[in-house]
Image 1: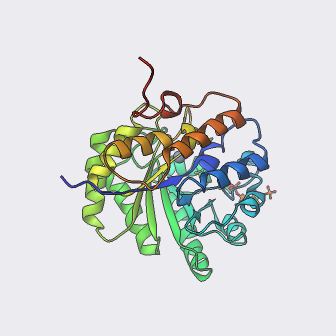
Image 2: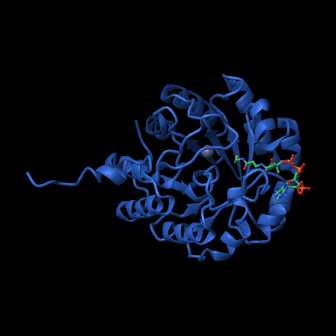
Image 3: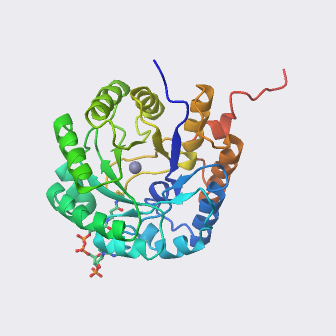
Amino acid sequence: MSLPACVTMREVGTRDGIQSLGAFVPTEHKIEMANRLATTGLTRIEVTSFVSPKAVPQMADAEQVMAGIKRVPGVSWEPLVPNLRGTERALATRPDRILVVLSASDTFNLKNIRMTIDDSLRSIGEIIPLARTAGVPVIAAISTSFGCPYSGDVPEERLFGVIGSLLDLGADEVSIADTTGMANPLQVERTVGRVLDRWPDANFGLHFHNTRGMGLANVVAGVRAGVTVYDASIGGIGGCPFAPKATGNVSTEDVVHMLHEMGIETGVDLEALIGCANRMGEILGRELPGQVMKAGPRSTRHAA
Ligand code: COA
Ligand code: ZN
């Protein structure tokens, strides 16, 4: 089996990680963390979201956060947008890419962005040309791709239908997301393998949550299937406010550590990431789920 020699990490900690926290994280801390993450070798950062501040108060400072980030060469800042209004707000802040979301499950889509899948596709059909005109590529993320916390299994053909529609609309990349940690590794390898067989020339990313401890195994399954873009959040923080019992994304430093141990490059400095995770723990004032930040890398040696 040939595994990819390198993969790209997409950091989502300051968006997916922070969005559902109760206490407002001060804007200067979000900016500090985003800028520090950008010095670790990470090249893609989902830094904030331009959503309704009533729906997600934690992201009410999206404009200020975008104004505070340092534009480092080689780092792509990729805020999330839920609708046309969010797209207009985001484009005014000079993002490098934007990420638009919809769900593979109608029930979840209604809960999360209050549209049916068909209405979402119509909206994305307006968003993509607008972004194109501004020269900004669009990633389309499909939440609950491997299972919905409300309606259960998501048939593969449904997922493939949504992927096909997004590619037809001109999405530059499709991110297949397991919003509530329902995927298992065999399911990921099988489903994602079929996706890559069907669309060999399209760009795909994977987004896993570690809700049930299957996150890292699912990353390995995705790597074996051939996907080379992975979302993760620093310290493993996160969870969708519109999904019951949602918990954190796979932790960036745990994924990077695992991939490096497997001989797969990420271009990211693990020690620098651990520094970011520790700082995030200080900012949030609690212990984070990440494991390598506590145990240290495998190369750590203790006095006998
Ligand atoms: N940015 C700021 N405000 C927005 C907005 C945006 N992108 N989209 C809508 N609004 C405002 C409207 O102006 C309106 O404000 P008002 O009550 O002061 O008039 C209010 O939100 C409702 O607007 P409406 O178009 O009816 O939207 P909605 O109530 O159907 O909400 C969403 C739809 C998607 C905008 C909203 O639910 C949302 O932002 N959800 C966040 C989803 C999310 O972040 N999920 C986690 C990540 S996947
Ligand atoms: Zn997520």
